[in-house]
Image 1 (cartoon, one colour):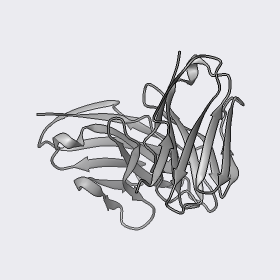
Image 2 (cartoon, rainbow over the protein chains, first blue to last red):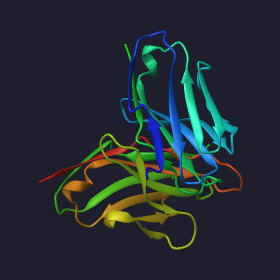
Image 3 (tube, chains in turn yellow, brown):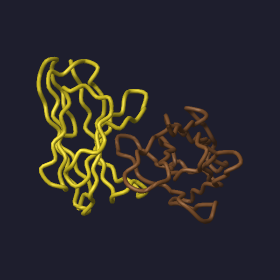
Image 4 (cartoon, chains in turn brown, green):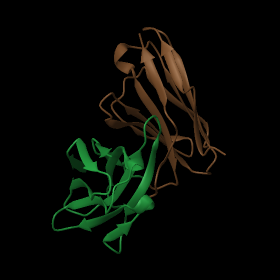
Length: 113
Length: 115
């Protein structure tokens, strides 16, 4: 059973389109995250949710909107995609509190043309 | 704010040689420290972590790291590199304190293992 899963694995789309990435974890964790990894492998936190509530919202354009329908799911919707949004997006989860390890999904490689 | 510096974006070692990946943190109070590994086209997975207690921490796949407060370091080592160790390695820090605290990742070190 996959602990943290993301769909789709690859996403190729044109500028201006709207797309969503879905994430699910079956670990029973309360906290979920979205990270963006750029072409230089730099990993940056975007959002964090704890039990469906937003607790971290880094400096991210408001074209990015996370949604957590329940604590096992955290989706990311992106409006009006731009070339600079091309990256690998990782979902992760952990037990609450942050001192616990984070479990990462396999990533979604987004390419905007 | 907490930060972490990984010295060397690329490290090459011969198979069987010692692996040493460097990580320094900036904080007046020692934070929680983590090392993650990312294999090609995969997500990150935890190698080891330091929270409290013993300063020499053993992780998976023969890796270990030593927390040195005087040097604000948490370097990752493995006595003998294996081809399967080729990956990207990330050091991460999380401040002490209750509640939610953000984990900050370093910029990563790519380990190449030469046969």
